[in-house]
Image 1 (cartoon, rainbow, N blue to C red):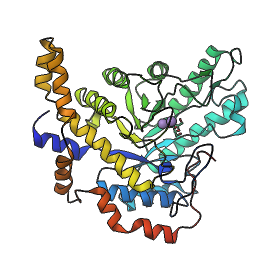
Image 2 (image 1 turned 90 degrees about the vertical axis):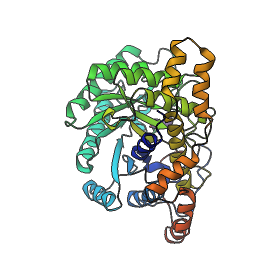
Image 3 (image 1 turned 135 degrees about the vertical axis):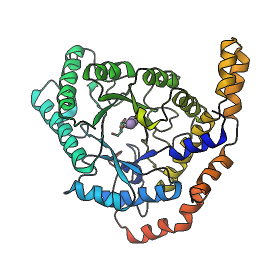
Length: 388
Ligand code: PSV
Ligand code: MN
Ligand code: MN
């Protein structure tokens, strides 16, 4: 796409969902570094997310994580979100932080533990009903550490049974987003290690089950954009958990480690129609900000996704197709690199100004004084749930 106003329209329409846990204290298993002013409850996390949306105009949805974000009254929490100009995004289940889940949750050999895990997933659908959320995001830590520990195929059967029960419970406008991860916390087998496994389960479940690509969950060197192109082609890409990684599941700011990879992913998204809202691709962040200030880090991540998207939109598709059809390898590559090497910051500044926003979201946020205000007001901030 090279029509400048069409590019601007597409950028204006893109929505990026931010994670409630990105606003809380987090760390590694070695240390959680507490930061001043972090939210003490889900209401305050939403207030911080509203700052990101105010600065960028692009982040109206917030993913919740249950029970990290457990409240008495979910309808009231959703109403609070609406009052801040936000909506509740994906509900993330948590079947990985309980002693019962040592040998797995939905794939555990013990039927009692499986029941407990599935009941939690069903409770998450109840929360979706109460909040208006349409997405149930499932990541399973399930797997084994040693050869022979459990029956790999039986675990797939148990997983399929659990997913089928939850799928049956979904409302018409609700869906499952199934996430895969090659490694960690299990060291020998993970029960949903890759996109193929997730895809096969989603295919069997039906149209309301789609795959989530978390950019930090692959082996080094994996061609993630190929996976994206494949899933989009099959109508099975539910969304992204964007983050950056250097080594493992680092959950650093999206676009920080490898902006070229993010561009290549967004190129496949744009080319295959994944920006259109009806395709249902959710552009979510799944990040933790252990040592940097959280709200500006989320704003920076939103901007990085927007910049990658803008570059992808600037690819001259006519010239690209012509070069590809002619078998001109160098010309095709040059078309792509021309777009990637374009400085899109002025274009995005224009889009923001046109929407009545400050062209510089980070400066806009700093000018609010929110960081100083919350540091003074909030004492005893909430931990995201990681690295305790
Ligand atoms: C664990 O790897 C993980 O980072 C998954 O990516 C989930 O999406 C996230 O935690 C929240 O449960
Ligand atoms: Mn994730
Ligand atoms: Mn992860």
